[in-house]
Length: 411
Image (cartoon, rainbow, N blue to C red; front, side, top):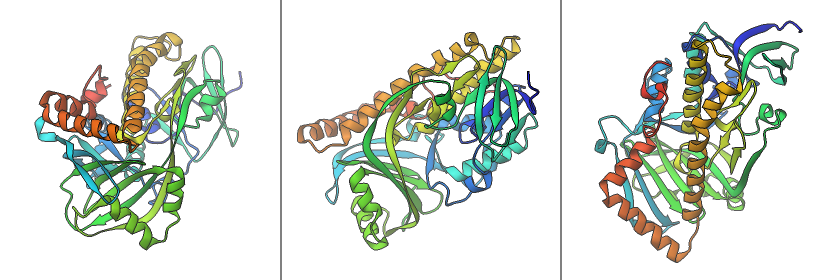
């Protein structure tokens, strides 16, 4: 066997918003971890790299606190106190029937926090630098991963070889690691594009997030630190291209036609980003010495803002399974061990992915009878306290068989 340049218990391909938390969790459990990322960390921390914000659910926030990430996010976490879900048409305003989630109904804590992705990356990088059991190699791409009876061995673009007992693919929806392992996916394109930009507004948002369903797709107004909001503006792909091509004044007019004036004067600031929207589910999550997490395993519609939280649930479950196996002296890369992770996460991911798919299909149309039914449905749920509170607990990520990290406990 060729001698590797680096050896560790676990190899993670991908140092993003799922790969780095997984490294921290495994290291907390006493395992040595090598993370390989093709991106230069300095570039991913730049404001121009990624304009998105992510809603970090209450349970995910507890995990970040336990992993030592939250202390590096001071001043960058915007609490989500309320969520208002409504239906409407462009320039006609919202339906009088709506659904209101108020965090005080289920406790004193916010439903979650909105954090700019770049600030989360910076905080994760600082936490990784404090963890002696984690080695981050970046920027450097994985050229190939070979598997044998005892190890996964990655060969990097510069010829470096990294060997571990288990490899995690955390390299996003395209996931070359998943593709090379022959794991197939199923899914479909929505014919929609998500436009992302930041808006400055006159009046304070009070931590209220708005999900405004329009015929071409949802228009989400997500509160950011200060008098700012992040727009996640879904349009049919052809319409999105036309909107993105508008000059600044016309783009602002189109935005205001949807945004309204409830926050006073508002204007887009900074760049515009766009992302094609699709559903992608891996048929399997595991192979001997290999496991998929987050977007490598499942890519979902952003309609409910749960994409990153699903990935962080993968992280918490995978870390618990692997650390428990290591403590028992088991082979952490064996199918026997990894099957527990797959059973734990696949059903939840598929169920929530299909639910978000159904919500998008239900709300992204302008059929009269369907509009009436969904408006009545929103109004009905808003009047049924137990159902409303159950939905809030689901959004907070505190329902179901939770891994220890999502309870705020050590792995």
